[in-house]
Image 1 (tube, rainbow, N blue to C red):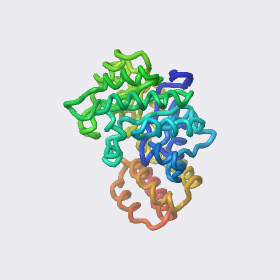
Image 2: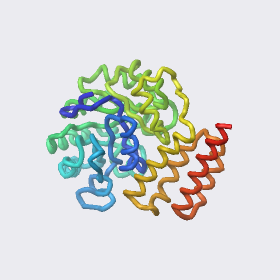
Image 3: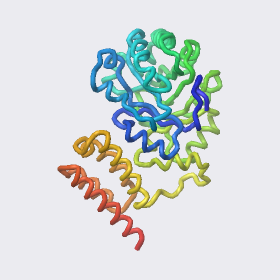
Image 4: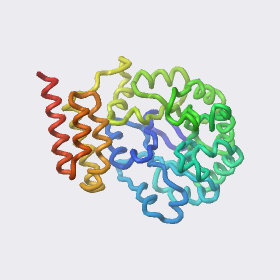
Length: 324
């Protein structure tokens, strides 16, 4: 998989996920073979104003490679300045033109830009002239069902010098509801010369295979399907024959949980791990006996030590129950 001058080891890409794809999450997913990962979405305004929260999202290690830095905003010159500022922090820059979150949209950024083709052209042109590294753009189908314009935006993005384009084929008004329309990915691939990355509703290796076959896209981007399930990446790369491979058992999950928790604690400390790891632990527990009670239990813990004690006990008891 080639994006501009960047050669990836495979075409399975981890989506930029606000509040999820921090450094520990990326490092865990890399252990299972993902070819490219992205930072969380970072405000261009926050970067040029040296806000700590924005700068903290750039933290990486030598193992966090290759990395895409995703930025968002609505001002071409601010985005260009921010992109130049962070160019050395990753291997490529990605522009978010698809975020449907109200706070982002109200600022004129994210998927609000799907209504502004001329502004999209100015943004991509400005950022392209500001950086030498590969430049990618992530979009949605359009603003709503009456303004589906991904082909128009895609052609603009290509004409202004982007090296690849990711399409999540839902409109902004859909959010994450309904079904992603993969036919739009196929249409975009047929319309453009640059690589097209498909995103949306990839939850099994079978989904990944079907998207590649049905759309002809160059790569796939995994998002919610990886929550608590890094094995999805491994199974896709292994060419799993079954559409829904058997989920790993409690002991195998506990190995991944321990690694994820250890990474989080080492980078962010116990207190933050207690606050932020609970959502991941809930996802890792899905489908196991006693998972509902476990999710309630960890949300009632008062310290990281309590959280870990409840977690380890749950996975070991689940293993024993299934092995009887």
